[in-house]
Length: 185
Length: 185
Image (cartoon, rainbow over all chains, first blue to last red; front, side, top):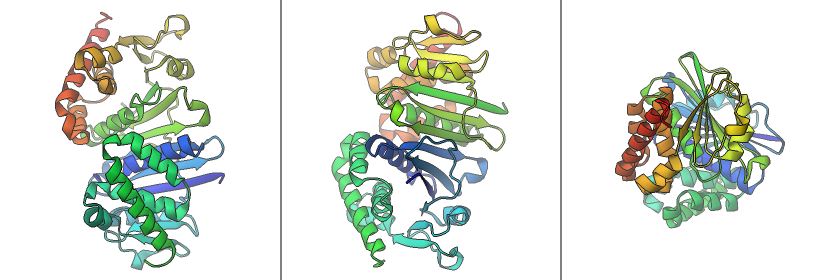
């Protein structure tokens, strides 16, 4: 993996920035990669789509912006519509399948994985706030771009008071990711 | 303010990434600016200096990396030594004066403001974890680059359970910043 680009899009309150920070820290501290993690805010993004980005590399990173993402995690339809077009050919698209409907605008050659992260967080973890943790688990299981041990460790560091619920959310996310990978969803 | 560049340096656990995220969100959502907020992690940074950066602009931001910071907030001596040299001529240097000693290596033309953020958090707020909030208050008071109302609002959003202690930390940080600005420290 010389350079791996991740984009996450959604709306405010979904914890997209936190996801990117945790993925970035985990990849750097645990997987020993170089990481640049960026979020952009602009007047046009407010109320609509917001995004955060992570570039992971075995070598030092000269250009910190995502050029064509290897993977795009879309957590809202607005973010999907705004950011899907840059996705790399044969790139990976992970969608929150309860919030994003991609049927009519899917670019060619994209591999789509459907993860009902919001529903899992709400109904199975019983905490909608863990949606981003569910999605991180699914992301790690689908792409293998970061280690699950690193993710688990970094979440414990960041949220020491919510270890139990976050572990549950992560495990359910991993399962959902594996299921999506096996083509069952 | 066409383009304003902020760099924050310190060590892990000081909440440097969070500072940059909160300053970036506040500037975007409250001050209606374009913002790009970046953190880089590399093997060389571990155990040593880490940094996060914010670019604020009235216009869309093409180049997301800090070129020569207008302000550098140094929260550890290692970070100070590693990152001070890029500071803009006549730039602003804000240091945690209990952790950073700058006397011997200070670049010419730099304005230095000393803020004992760690000591204020520890002794006056009675929570060392609020050091980054103290420093954000001082930063806002010294540079006026972001609005204090925006900062206060964004902190309430982010930490709804710690409103009272964070308000205290912010107010003490603002006072310390005003004192440093008046040349009393």
